[in-house]
Every structure is written in C-alpha cells, then in structure tokens.
Image (tube, rainbow over all chains, first blue to last red; front, side, top):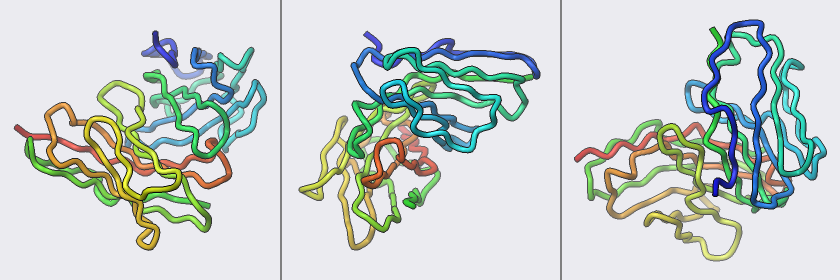
Length: 114
Length: 114
C-alpha cells in the first residue's frame, strides 16, 4: 500500500493551460504539504494544511490554489501555467505539526510546461 | 530563522569505502535535525532524525549521524557504502515552530563507483 500517492506522475502541458495534481495519504496523518523541487534539486515548501485548514502559504503566485476536501487529500490546482512552473512537485504528510514529526513524501509529479 | 548548509554538492566514493556527508545549520533555538534520501525518480525517504538525547543517531541502511551542538553540525556517515547508496541526500532542520517550518539543505549527490 502506497502511503502518500500523487497523480499524475508526469504532466506535460502548454503555457496558459490549467492543470491539477492530486494527492492522497492513507497514514491517518493530520498535516499535509506541497513542496516544489527545482532543476537544482532545491526543495521549497509551498503550502501546508493541518486538519483541512491552511497553515502555511509561502510566497507562491495566486495562480496556485491548494484544496483539502478532507485531511487525507490535498490537491493542487495551477491556473495559466508558465514556463517557470516546470519543476517536480511533491506532496507530503506528517502525523501533526510537532517539530519532530518526520515527513512522508509521495513520488512526485514532474510538470513540464512548453 | 533557521538555515541549513550542505558543504558538498557532490561526493564520489568507491564501493565499500567510508563516506561522510557534511551538514551545518544555524538556529537561535533548539532544533530537530533530519537526513532524507532521494533515489532517482522517487520522493524523499527519512534516513534518520535527531530530536533529543544521545547525540549519535542510527538510521536505516547502515547510516548514522552525530549531532554536535558546539559545531552546529549534523554530519551523516556510513562505514562502507554500496552501489545502491547512490542517491541525493538532504539535511533538514526545524525548530520548535513545527514540522511545517522544515528547511532543507541544497542536497549532496552521492555517487558510488565500482
């Protein structure tokens, strides 16, 4: 059983399109995240939800909108895609927001915008 | 705010040789420290973590790390590496502010040569 699963694994699209990435965790965790990994492998947090409530919203363009229908799911919708959005997007979860709670990552969605 | 510096972007070693991947952090408060491993085309997996107690922490796959508060370091070591250890390794730190404030280093690419 995959603990954190995200779909699709690959996403190739043209500039200006709108796309979504879905994420589900079956660990019973309270907290979920979206991270962006750029071409240099640098990881930066985008959003964090705890029990369906947004708790972190880093300086991400308004074109990115997360949605958490329940605490097991956190989806990411991106409007008007730009070339600079090309990256690998990782979903993750942790038991709670306590600092020692390790993160469990999905396998990533490689987004390529042409 | 905390930050993490991984001192080597790439580390090539021969199979069965020992390896040390260096990580330094800065924080004005007590920290929780983590090492994650990312195999090609996969998400990050937790290798080990330091929360408190013994400064020598053992993780999966024969890796260990030592927390050194005076040097603000958390170096990762393995006495004898295998080809399968080829991956990207990330050091990460958070303070008591919560798991959502986890900050990652830039990553170290470990390449094992036969």
